[in-house]
Amino acid sequence: MEDEARFERLYREHAAAVLAYTLRRSSSPDDAADAAAETFVVAWRRLNDVAEGQALPWLYAIARRVLSTQRRSSRRQEAIVARAAPEPDQSIWGSASTPPVLRALAELPPEVREPLLLAAWEGLSSREAAAVLGCSPTAYRIRLYRARVQLRSALAGLEAASSLAHHAPRPSVKENSPC
Amino acid sequence: MLRESPLELLRRANPASVENARELAVAINLDERVGSAIADKTSSPEARPSWTKAVRIPSRTRKRGTQLAIVLALTVAALVSVPLVGARILDFFWTSGTPVQKSELGAQDQWLLEHIGAGSGEKRIEKIASDGRRTFYVIHGSEGRMCLASGPSGGRPAIASSACGTASDLRKALPTRDHPLYAETGVRADTGTRKMTIERIIGLAGTGVVRVELLAGDGHLIASAPVTDHVFELLGVSVAPPVSLRAIGEKGDRLYNKRIP
View (cartoon, each protein chain N blue to C red):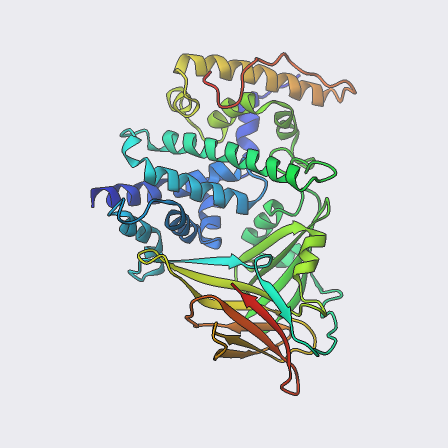
């Protein structure tokens, strides 16, 4: 009985935030809804793992893995049907008609984007964002600082309308790896 | 030289607020999706005694204390179609629809249109059929993408469900002379027994189809609905699959069978 009450509270308090998180990182509302639903399935299975006061970062961490799996699965499916060309990146922050800052963001690798997005779009503190990424707050702050430098650099490149893409050095970090 | 911090620029470019998501969650029945996903993917009730009650939580928003989750399943690809021998040739019903201006749509529909899986470029929306209660739309996207959407006529939001894919795949799902029925099936999953029940079938019928009948697995007639402007609605049914849809012509002739497994 206690589990149901906890899950109900978790869902009611955070469903919209989790859907917003998946929406900002998915190519369609359908994909985002599927990812949000899957996130709560995992949350239900692992209800005992959630720490008091850390529910939202914990849900974001699950959603992040769900989205990563979804993307891998999608890529595999595309490979199976042997499409002639890969689908263009249709995510809302990566399309061609988006503002310069989002176009600059799209140039960054996922492991660089995520610290920025957690701060700017999810509004998480360093401690909360670090919990999502599975690293220490100090490591997160370093990662965020580097990401800001790279974003600023990419933006400057766009603003200068240079024909040469301006890429800042990228850290050798893999997606989902601790920072 | 950049005057604003990149983080501030990013904050202002946030493509989806929590409020957007809250509205979308209602429009796409997130509660029911979560309930269905839990019903489909968690361990058995025996393994987790509180499972059934947990699934019930999302569906409380429907004001019924039910432990059933309803999921609107687009059964485009899953349906097995069996044309009847001697069926007469049917025409395509859709050549071009009525254009819908974006200004006619509410903010939520416009937002959805921007983020629906129809490519990132400009989208064009056409109303292709309506019986006055349910309206179907085709959304022409970019990069060869297309969506088939429907919703309550005159409703806000207008788009309640959608299926997106490549234009060539979506066109195949629409009624053609060989396969004159397209159906969206509303399925209820009993989380206790894990049995599926079809609650409603809404769809499109090709030219020449005046009535659609719903038949049980043993062939007996369960329900029947007229076709108005190519739209049919079989509501309030409660039957376990497999069932079949039968297209009936003007003279009462049986034109086509579509099996729903």
